[in-house]
Image (tube, rainbow, N blue to C red; front, top):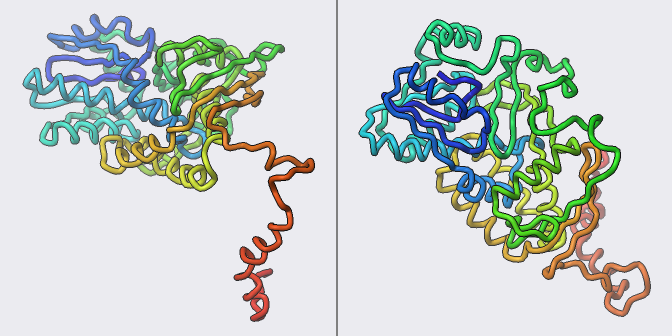
Length: 387
């Protein structure tokens, strides 16, 4: 059974939940484990590894699914599944059970990771195998077996939370015509709506070393501390709230609301620094890579040769992505306020509209003649492309 899509799976008579920052959702798992017949419970802190080995590589890639989704649920699954396989093998388990539904993406993400590390392990999915047709029936089952839940039928949003984000699905959100109740008490968990944000902007400066954020406002921080700090700043200013009708891997469209305040700031800042430090061809090609990288993460294909190869390419592009990005946070908006880097490719002497001795504007005539030669030839041959 999975309450609120808990970040955990069952291993025979043992239970496992990887702590990737889901806060209070970890409370009471001991009692729940006992009432569901477990003889052993594993809860492990995976936050540092999660951020450093899964989140930051995805941020460096600039990977965003369908222009909006910062992959908060997606890249939390591989690390959990990998660890659970390790425990299952150590325990001598002959099967792994998960609580994902048959309609969602998580079943794919967990099972692909399990196949990567335990190809012959049997996988049990009660939602697909039992006669469970809805979350209400899941609640009925839990109540009938005295399994403690932290939700009610009225607050039965399908939620997934970790240190990076929280997602909201179900109930009134299932109809895309309904406006999300951002200002309803208890709906948003990581921050406030833009309307509720302060009237005064907040400035923040983020330092990157080779594409990795390492400091905020001059204070060096570890990965976990840094993400938490940006979540606080972003959440307080209404940053990172997304309403998305996305294309699930299993074929259907699904509507959800995502809160990713700190992640939204990091993606924006990292891209701003790349604008300054990457050459045009690399920057443009990397945008193509970002789309494919996002699909791999979303589809649960983290442990694949292609994802590994794309990460190697991304890492090679980050050698000079070092510097400081200053941003202004104001009522849901991220406004650029300055960027500097020792590897900046911007040359004011070349770019200036004032008189200079570096760029001879007469050179552009020859460039245009050569660049436009194919179009000129087609025009002389009478070809027209205006209709």
